[in-house]
Length: 490
Image (tube, rainbow, N blue to C red):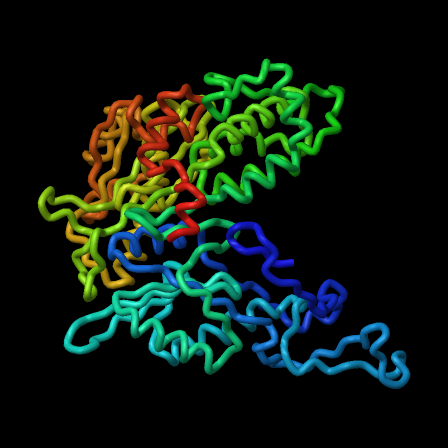
């Protein structure tokens, strides 16, 4: 059953699936198929808001059956639909079917070929993002299209051109034009008013309902008080001691649900998910209590979304310098990095037009010998992500005159980034971590000092108090979801 953006029943579907897991021939060795990155999706939202454009959505019906098979594939006859002796006769597939290990890749190549013929250019930074910049009526216009398997989102500076693109795609595949995007990839989209919002309210409500019994039990222990942070500030997590009693609660399922929220629209719980996911194989009671703490925090903040500020009036043609703040000689892109020495997690977050487009927490792969060393490594990891964002935007035709602004809260690390000198505390640092210096020299990044309490990435590295959570929420552009009645009216 397929549901719409309001959770109502939209359609019932039934598909014939092939048991691709039973294919022992291994005839198809190349089975990888790319999908749109969540960071790219948020970049699309930010650019659409910056241009004042409306994002449209299309759906390809029975997508995989549009792809042709390069090699013969035979399957057993389905039960109750046999023709002749099923032990002596099999079916030969003419098109790819759901379940075949090679079907996703064949579908992607088929769809990409059609887009290239239409005039789109595949973006190297994300092969599921396609762009087309062309002159129309004496002005340059841009059209962007993102593909997530059979879901298509697109926007452009000229609405009539988008309609033409939809028609051309419809000539090659059976499609459904869903109009302005309202729901996609498990996230709600609202484009009315002065913001484009991206939220997972419906999904979160489903998760809270699934674990309601456990949440109510945790509330009783804490007298119903809702926490104001994803984890208890300063909380540390130890492994379950050897011989400790395992828990019966669905820990793995709960952490998986939280992980989907953290990569979609909730950077505020990213550190909590990072910590909790390290104990999915041997969770103990302490770990389950922390999961319930995060669940109760989400229950109190269920109606929030990432909000991308919209341009008051849409642009009438493509402007390459749209992302430059010429008045301040700065870029619209801001990045922040932070690290927590000894525990060795580092993190980064990037915003475009005042809302988060990328955040990335991880454990450092090397042992840092000092706070400076740890912060320097975190800055390098952030530089890699910033370089990817910059290349992606340049491939889309934007002229970025100014470096991306990087925020760091360690003076010694900032000095190391801005100077090539070797000191006794930096002489042992491996060459690959000096990539951040090259980014500064090449004009990709420029770093500014920020106070630790105002660093948006601080809450991605440790269990912080409410003030740090408020900083990351503000920097990420997270705010209340507009009222459902307002959404319906829009």
